[in-house]
Image: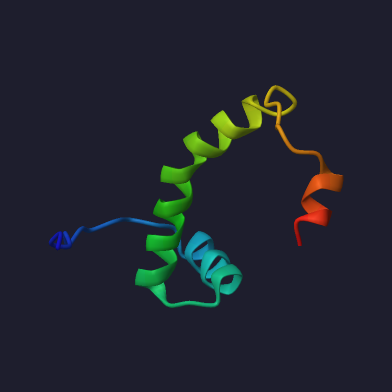
Amino acid sequence: MERARKITVEISPDLLDRAQRASGAGITQTVRTGLQLVAASQTYAKLRGLRGKVRFSRTSADLRIDR
């Protein structure tokens, strides 16, 4: 298991308050969630770039029948 790193971050009180209200979590979990979203943003951008370019072998009708 990876060891957690303890860091010091300076954040404006207003930004922290807004982020905590949006997440409904404490400071640590709010910062973790924000970092996870930043880390995932590159993957989301790549997926958006594939929009309309991926061809599927099954149609939506096939998927309904498969239920």
